[in-house]
Length: 113
Length: 115
Image (cartoon, rainbow over all chains, first blue to last red; front, side):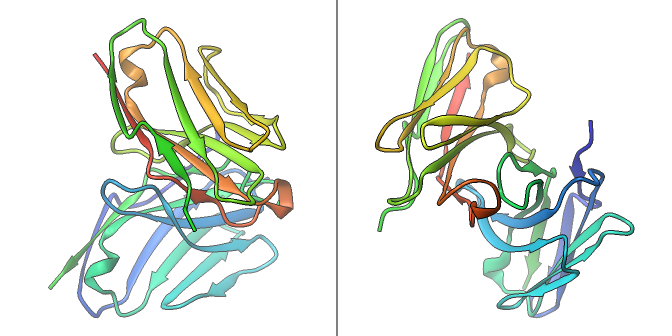
């Protein structure tokens, strides 16, 4: 069936650089997208979300971009810090909310000192 | 304020046994969802309950069942355990459902190992 996927399983960046994590989705009915961060031994933590009527949303040090034409989602993290090391998941939902989310496989972000 | 709490944190069962996992949502949250996360993969949706009624169900066999109590806490039951049921079971709570779901808050999960 349709699912959300990520392009790269591991991303290594230098501390202080910007990170870009990508996600491809295939369910055209999805209208709500979320990025989660999961640290080892913990549950996923909400980072930022975006609805399909927007193409960009900014938070603190994070920006999510949504390109509905090519069904692509990205998470940009500015000035990456050691505490950003984690697995990042994109997730998609329908009905404008977070009911029954479909998660991608995740990208492991590694911060090099 | 306490976040989403789950119990037990870890448990070991053998094939064929049954397991019950418990979840207490954040105070004021009326929606509880369950997800299964196999090692190295993203969480997979199992159930959502809102106001004590099942709102959604993922692609899981009937061995999986859940319920939500009047205080909005929830239990996930898995019968006739298989080796493949070994996973981290995550509970998440939110204020409401549909467009009013708001942010989904996850607990730290119950790690189930089936031998």
